[in-house]
Image 1: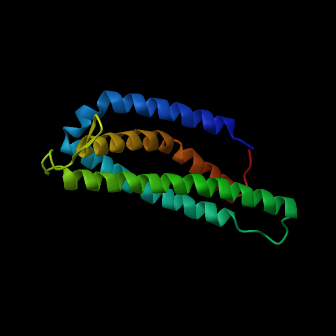
Image 2 (image 1 turned 120 degrees about the vertical axis):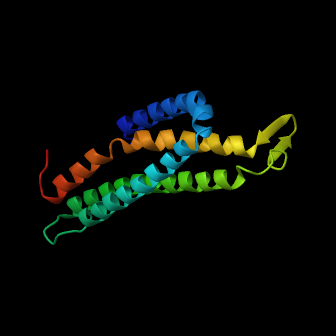
Image 3 (image 1 turned 135 degrees about the vertical axis):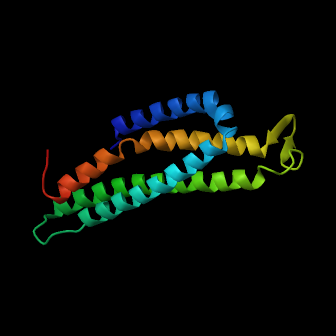
Length: 162
């Protein structure tokens, strides 16, 4: 079953991220401190997501009293949560790798890393910067809900259901 609320959240996140990327990339790439802040933020968020993934794994354990229907529901819930959080974690790692690439190619001559495909000229530095900013805004907006996800997991772990 499609989670319409989640899909709407993703679509709005994509639109907001694209707008912010278009508006703010030039300002952000001029500041080394901003790029370092992005790297630090996503390094910390990676640890937070790993902690939440551990909690998701703990909730997946079956008790001997669980019915077949409850086991199936637990499994589906685990799969959904684990997949979403794993993708978020991988997205954080992609951002960090893109920042590394950006710093590695930052001081290389523009002529060396500019590609011309037909009439389209692609500057690798600029595209890397745009990808960093786009992924950063996208992942940061998604990450805003992490405390509430963790709160819900702790409630479930302690048998508290709303």
